[in-house]
Length: 147
Image 1: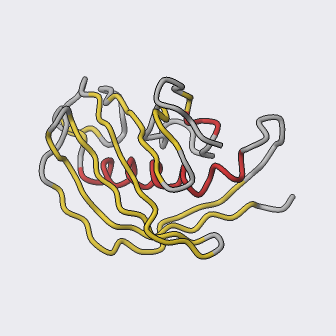
Image 2 (image 1 turned 60 degrees about the vertical axis):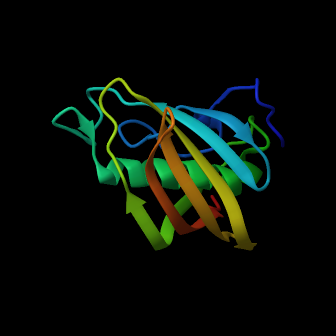
């Protein structure tokens, strides 16, 4: 599945996360190797402290953005009741430069470095306008839960 730049989709179709742990809103671009997401920081978000979206929230946003690359294969059929489990297996490197504020809309970009079956290594960055907020390299694991 390839999403073109003007085809914005709700990320619910690609992630099992729901509120209060959903830290991305929309997929703006998606290929087998790359994803771009958007997320608006709201005041009632569990990772907002003193009007800022804290580091743990930025990392969760990155992980959810990254998992869209690997997760898209599990959710190609919207009618199927697919259940998946996924988690970060390793954070190789993370650098936090700034924290966004309530009301900011952040854009996260991730690129697949390598993949072996259900495990992938991904480079990711998040921006507030042109300001780099966080950059990292993480490993993720995603697997379908057999019912």
